[in-house]
Image (cartoon, rainbow, N blue to C red; front, side, top):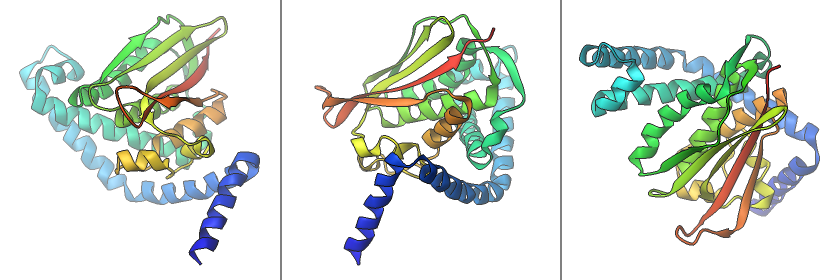
Length: 267
């Protein structure tokens, strides 16, 4: 019985690599599960917003002339509460796109992608510092893009969350902007757990996490990369992952891993 179940499982994974329609139907079925979770999480969302508001009030009392994000860097306790709630809200925003992907279209606006990205990097930089992870920002970008900014934010959130979660302590990672003639290439490079060749598509499925990733980090819903990929497919952002075959010399079991996404420059 166990052998039959494993054979069926491997057959399903094999179809994912050759049958796009099967991938879409499976993703749709899994999105229904997230819809149920979203309906149950409304009260939790309100609680998170209430806690964030309280943290912002504490930050304002101490540093009335600073925005909350800057005041948070000066007050470790209140700052930790503030950034924790910001992180929760970002992750819940990503779940919304898994539930209803068509909302990526509409509410588009023109914005500077580099400065927009810094908002997300600041939130995750707080988490990175806790594990002595250095995240470098490389390259320059002065261009604007024209998208639904919440959709692009969900892509950034998913990729940064993956980068920070799986990078080993005391390592370094990089986010590189490359401004080309008609698009902006953004590359997220870090040391991550092994992604087997047959897992390269599966890691973008809701609730799926690679075997090595589960061994390194037990917690995780398998939401961030799934939302990023769904948005990428809808907006043609060409999200891809590559990984070196040789493990890193300093960090056993970690491999140089690169996620890349492309945004069209606004005319």
